Image (cartoon, rainbow, N blue to C red; front, side, top):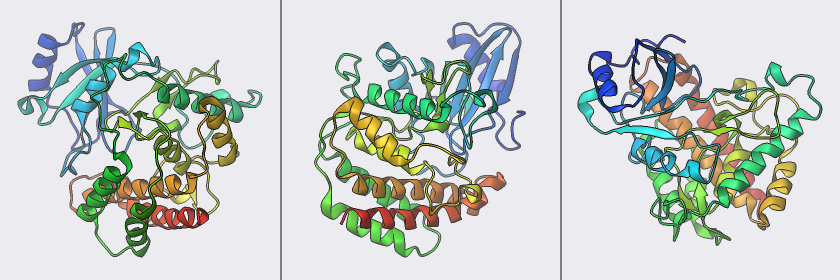
Length: 343
């Protein structure tokens, strides 16, 4: 799509920088914006016949630790050696004089993204919902089995005390983005730190691993060919990633059609199927998943609230953001429900 008003890139400073620092930046430059995504802004840069992808943080106030382009570059400049779905990062810019924020340029990949419902290209393919779901669980397990020392990512995070730090960090983000009272969030913030599970392993945690951040080839629903959006990646408990995936899966208490967050719609395998496949591929015990799922709902609620706060504060003109307040309330309520299932 054409660039949304207010989200244009300053080509007068960006173009000469890219021509000097990005191999292959030759020929006439054209810029378009990817339609999907609600947080980081993603653009296609085409120099002649060669295309790249540029990602930058959103405009407006940024929560501490969020939208970390340096982290995304760290991961995507190393991880593709061991995890083929990770696109290779080609350039990191930390000079605010170029576009006003850090940004990453990476390789351009092509394929199909499953966003809200089954894409038309997969209609009629046998057992396709199960095959796509199984592919997602295989990719998740493959990521969680990456040897972080071998790919030079042992310094990506501090796994000791990971969940406790995550809770503190997301609680702080909630307080910074709060616009109204929310009793469900208050309960999650109070109860989750009281019974944190012991991790069974240490792995790369993507932080937002779901269909919306994956890419498939139309002729092959059995393999995830790309995974995007790595700015929250760290080292920690892999079940945190699985729970995040589950929080975007169809849920009886959430009206997916009313949510601005890309939740799956239509017929898909239930969450028990995802857990069974993941347990099969990893060997992990999923007995404490209610806690992890409640935590994932808290994080989703905070992300929605941050986007809504940007809208309330006038940091974006994107009218989609005005609906995220409802999403924050819905996921906080779901988190309380999940927490209760573990008791």
